[in-house]
Structures are given as structure tokens and as C-alpha cells.
Amino acid sequence: MISNKAQEIPPFIVMDVLEKAQELEVLGENIIHLEVGEPDFDTPECIKRAAQRAIEEGKTHYTHSLGLWELRDAIAQHYNAQYGLSVSAHNVIVTAGTSPAMFLVFAALINPGDEVILPNPHYACYPNFIKFLGGTPVYVPLREENGFIYDIKELKRYLTARTKAIVINSPANPTGMLTPAEVFKKLACLGIPLISDEIYHGLVYEGKEHSALEFTKRAFVLNGFSKAYAMTGWRLGYLIAPKEFIRPIQKIQQNFFICAPSIAQYAAIAALKEAQKDVVRMRQTYDKRRRYVFKALKEMGIKLNTCPQGAFYFFINVKHFIRSVSGLPNSYALAFDILKKVKVAVTPGVDFGQMGEGYLRLSYANSLEKIKEGLKRLKAYFGVHEN
Ligand SMILES: Cc1ncc(COP(=O)(O)O)c(C=O)c1O
Image (cartoon, rainbow, N blue to C red; front, side, top):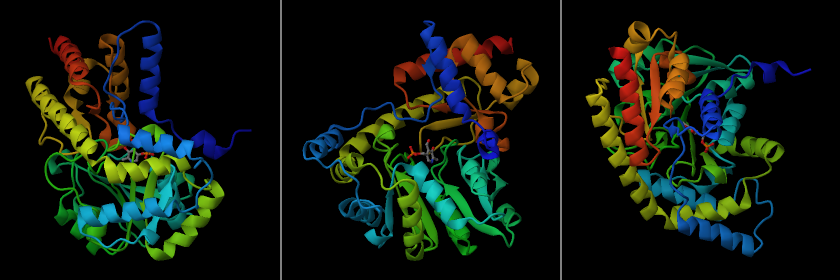
């Protein structure tokens, strides 16, 4: 019999959309992909070359469970240079992607019944990790009129004696919004450990990205190479944790994962030391697309309070359209209707929690040409219904 845990875990809806879109592609349909949160760029050459060298030199064995020392040191130095910190390589654990790092943090913090504060909307997988480990996600609404960032006064109402940690993700998936320093400061003052998902750092176009470690030592940083370095398939991430957590987390890593992939670790050293020019190039391209999408959405009559400052997403409010125009029940039905009628794949907001209902997430990790075509089709879709 299939376990309750396996039965209860919800699907990652964006994957359902992607798979449906792929089915249509097999039938010969021309689909524009604005759903996936994956860079459309190829991994930079210097990173690929480092991986090839690692293979040729036979560096294909298990590494230390905490990761290669040279990589841990490069990560610490990167954080110190970027945010003016004094992180030690001893506090860095290299993982097979940010997702395993998330598992390790939650596993090291949560006892059954413990609560973890999550933003809502939020990255779809956070609550599933927490529930899988016996914890309870506690959702704090992020309001569009507040730029989709935490309202600390409101957040305080959700704290209890069982609150183990507060998750923050800036710039955020699905909104692209950046949390300002004052909010980090206030969060740090609450005295509760912060779990800061910094996976979209390096992809900030306006304002300044902040690490939670600038504000408190009681922070767990999650980060990885998937987004800024276009390395999703390499599966490499890391965790920066307080000293007393390193050994417990190492034991979990040894048991569950042994270590991160060796070849990807050598590639990641090159990413940090040699690929900064590539990061800048990709960031500039994303920024051009972001500006284009912002203008185009405005012209389509979609209201955005502010332009998202980071990541590669727009989170657009289509509540009025769903309620009064479409005859569809929710964002899920809307996303599949759009896919069916105009062949554009978008992610329904409900994938990111209840506060995401009534929204669609559009990713601009696609070529400007494809984005233009996708928006043209969306305009036709919304326009036709408007008449
Ligand atoms: C906010 C956020 N955190 C973590 C991840 C997972 O990253 P990785 O590929 O490093 O596991 C994603 C992927 O989309 C994400 O959006």
C-alpha cells in the first residue's frame, strides 16, 4: 500500500502545466512557454570546461559530505565580498541543489508540531517539506498593495511558542519582489531564526539584494547555482548555517545524500571564480525583457503596483477577469484554458498558496521574441473575452 505521506503530498502544479504543454507540442502545436522558472541560457562556457576537466582528471568520486573545501571557501568568500560579512567556510554545506538544502534545514529544526512561518504566496514546495517532516506551515499573507512583502505587524500575530523559524525569500518566487533592509531588520529583531532563500540573488535589476546574515547570526541561508549561473540540471546548492547545526546537518546529509555531485562541485568553483561576467550578461538580458513585459502588460490593461525588481517573474492579478469575464472557477482552470485556446503556458497563482489564487505567474526566462509572441497571444485571449 502507498504511504499516507506519498498520497498526501500535492503535485507541483507548474509541472502539470508543463507536461500538458509538452503533450500539445507532440501533437504539433506551437506553445510559448512562460510557465517554467528555469533560465533559458546555456550554462557559461568556463563552467562547462571546468566540469570537463574534472571528468578527464577522474574527479568523479564521492567528496567530503560537507562539500569540497575549495568550494565551501569560495562560497564563504563570495558572501563576504558581496554583503560585507565574515562567513567562515566551516559554516557552509554544499548540497545537491537548493531543494536538498531546504530539506536539511527543515529536518534540523522541526520537531513534530513545530510551526514555521511562510509567506503566502510562496515557493510551492516550502509547505510540503515542512509537512513531510511533521511540522506545521503557518501562512502570513503578503498583500499586493504592500508590494508582496511581509507586514511585520501582521506577521507578529502569527507567532506562537511553537514558532521555530521564519522563511523569507527575496527576490521572491512567484512575485519577483525584493524585501528592503528595514523589513529584514525588523524580522531579525523578532529573535526567531530566519531561513532565507537567496536563490535569486544575482538576478536583481533595481535596488539592493540583502542576505539575512547582514542582520542576524541566527539565520540559515539557502542558495544555489541553478538560477544566476543557469545550472538547473547540474543540481548544486548550498546552505550557510550556525556552527552548532553543522554536525547535525552533516549527519543527515551523510545518510540521505552522502554528498553533492563531485563534477558539479568543480564546475561551481569555476562559476564563482570565473563566471561573474556571464552573470552580468544574463542579468542585463533579463532586465531588458522585464522592462518590455512591464510595458506590454500595462498596455494590456493589467495593473501592477510596481515593477518586480528581481528573479524572472511577473505575478499578475486576473481576479476581475476570472470573476466577471471568463466564466472559469479559478486560476487553475484559467491557466489550462489559456493553454488550450492560445497555446501559452502560464502558471496558476494557486500553485503558490491560497493568497496566489486570482493571479497568474509569467516567467520571462525565455527569448524576447517568444515573450513578444506570448504576450500578443495573451492580449488576444483577454481581449476576446473582454468584448
Ligand atoms: C524560491 C526557490 N527556491 C528554491 C528553488 C529550487 O532550486 P534548486 O534548483 O537549486 O533546487 C527554486 C526553484 O524554482 C525556487 O524558485
